[in-house]
Length: 151
Image (tube, rainbow, N blue to C red; front, top):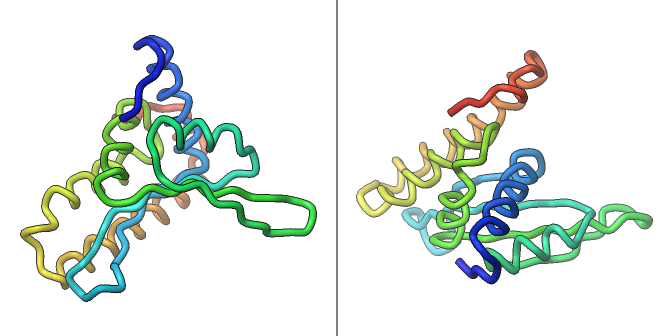
């Protein structure tokens, strides 16, 4: 990880980024186009406020791309994959709430993927997608969950 400022400043930046990621981020396990046994972790953030995404890119690397969704609004997408994504998730995990289970799941997958078959990896990818839907459903049904620490 690229660290330019002192520890206290970096900690507050990482905590902010983790909160931002909890609301606007996504964790996925994706199958590569190479073959059925090649899967990797992806973490990405999408937002219209580019300066925050630029700060994330400065601290963690990855790619920042511009996407136009409507003629009047520009959306930006920051994305990091594989080991960089796992590094990012490990750094922000202590500050996550909503996405903590997904982050831990993706980190565990990355560590274990060398020992898994293609079918097993596909099950992991399916499960992380299910986890995302479960969190969204739980928050709609119980919005107070956002105020509780799930760790």
